[in-house]
Image (cartoon, rainbow, N blue to C red; front, side, top):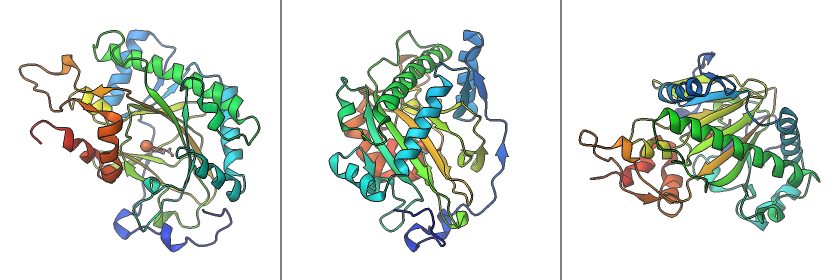
Length: 323
Ligand SMILES: O=C(O)CCC(=O)C(=O)O
Ligand SMILES: [Fe+2]
C-alpha cells in the first residue's frame, strides 16, 4: 500500500474533482465535550442534545485508563509500522484482519489514503487466536482495551437510553464488537486525496480514540473539523440510531482529511446490533407512524450499506415503509 516516503500521490489515490476536499474547513470548538463524571441526569440530557445538534461528541472523565489508551495506540501504530509483507499475511488468514479490501475504497478505480486493520472482539473468548501476534503485546493490550471500551459503551448506552426516555436495558448487551483501526500516513497532497470519504457509520455506535486532527463532520451541509482532546473519546452513532428513533436522531456523515506532516491512527470501536432492528415503541404513535419496517442488521442491511455508503442515508431507503 502507501509508502511513508512517497513524494507524489499515485494516480489511484487522486480522487475525482467533486470528491476532493478543496475548500478550507474551519476547526470548531463547539462540538460538545461531555464530562461523564457530572451528575447523571444532566449528562443524559447533554448527550441527547449533542446527538440532536451534531451527532458527535467527545467524552472525558470516562472509565478507560489513560495508560491503557496510550498502550493501545502504541500497539496499533507498531502494527502499522510492520513490513507490508507481514501485514498482508493477516489479510489472507481471515477476512476481518488487515484489509486492503474494496469495501474501504472510494470506488473501483480510486482508493482512500489509508490502511485498515479490522478485527472482532469479545466473541466467546475465541477471537484472540486470530488476532495479530506481532507486536508481541498485541493480544494482551488490545484484549484489555477492547473490554474497557465495551464497558464505556454500556455506560453511554444507558445514559442515552435515559435521556431518550426509553425503558431500562433497551439497547441490550449482545452487540457485536469490531475494532476498526485506520492508519493514515503523511500525504504529499491533501487537497487531492481523502483518508476516508464521507459516510455514516453502519453500526449503532462508534467510540474512537484519536490524537491528530483529520476528522470532519457534516453540519448544515458544510464540513466542520473536530479537534480531538488528549485522552478523550470521540463518539458518534451510526445509522441504527435513525431507525431506532424513527428518524428523530440522524446519524451524521463524516470524513477524514490527510496532512503533510503527521501520520494519524484512529482506533475506532464499532458496536453492531445483534438482532432485528425497528423503531422503538415510544417513538411511534398516532401522530408518528413507523418509518421503517423491522429488518435484520447483519444479513439484510449491511450488504446494502456497502453498495450505497457514499450517499449517507440511502442504505436505509430499502427498509422504509412504503419505499
Ligand atoms: O479516522 C477517523 O477518525 C474515523 C474513520 C471512520 O470514520 C470510520 O472508520 O468509520
Ligand atoms: Fe466513520
